[in-house]
Length: 269
Length: 273
Image (cartoon, rainbow over all chains, first blue to last red; front, top):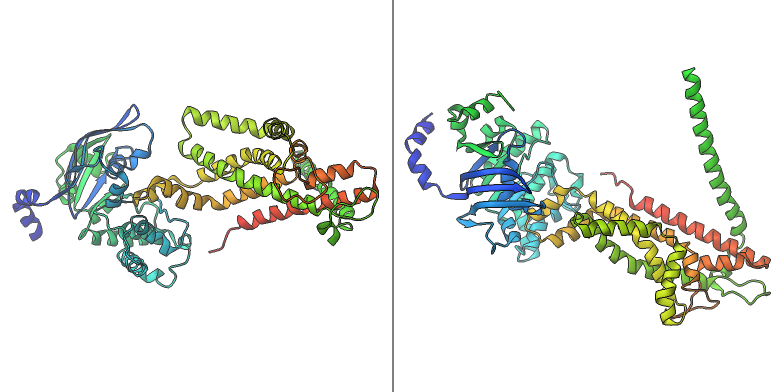
């Protein structure tokens, strides 16, 4: 309660003091002739967890994938407007997409371990980007990443086993560790828990909550309770438009827009 | 009444299965009985003896087949891999549609036609039959099968695994080679093995390109012996001894195909976790 009062009082101050990591400005996205995102304007603060919520097909995944330009591989995709990462437009002609993707990591809905050993999975991004100075340094990075991913204790004795032998929840934590190993600034998560059982989900949510100290996290989720559990800020999307973006607490207790209220009370889904 | 129809259909299916398997077994056993007695050490190590003399072997034919198949594989695999990657990754434009169509057409071309084609563009300019021409003909037969199998294998790799590689900041070509191909490697290797098995027994194209030889060949620009052609030559001859050796060679070929299929089974086995 005290936290709430303080937050309200400092609201204006906080908003201007918090550094903005990602900013979309008049951002439009097209799949060929079909427009998927309409005039998105959003400011994501750094070192926080933001949730994108909304019904299926509302564009939240499209926006997420625009932040690391993963949509580039879709034929016919087109972008208008600006997407700024630390005040640099990532769609500028001079931008190296490969380097961008090292700074903006992504975890997918279905866990995607590579057909390699657990160690090699985590080491892959590190090796590709030349981040390790020596074999020993590489081992340290892998261990650190697995610890951050809450997987170290379970796999430390079998790092050379195939990653495909892990359970679904373990594989997803491996994917998170793999992303953390390249030390990104931003981590994008596209419904990371939707394919997992509740216990695995809980473990991963705990892990995500710890990430806010060092990383800017954006998580797309269908599960509104998950958004309230995990995120600091929430953006509600509908039919390609951003309806409302605010602190999670406000969105779920005192939303400004009627459509937001309708969605979170389950009037439509 | 329904029960009767059920039983009838089941009975007919079983009968067909028995028939087909029976014929297959008959062929295999016939080859086995005729061939196994003639497969001895001589067969593997000796050259054919002059007409009329007993004995001799098919060492040169075995070696010749091996050489041409290996060269054909070395030629066809990279080409097919590249084409398959192109079709699987960028396979939406007009060029891709045409390529796929051409591959399908080439797959249906009779192997003797391919032999004549290589005869025209390789043997005639070179003014001689050669092992390299034979290998080229075999490679042309392998390519369509390989392209189809490899494209299929690559398509089976989930899109998200590829995206996960890209998301780590890996350049596209590294994702293809280190992640996609590695994921698909079992299926690709099976495809290669089966293409080899298919092509090891091709006779017609070799008649126009490698021709045949009664001796060992150490260079690639001379005619070379091969197992299928040798079988043909010996089988239509009037000599019993040659017939015997032809059976042995047939048996060897069949065993080779069996070995390849077992290898495919081994490669694609599900490793228990």
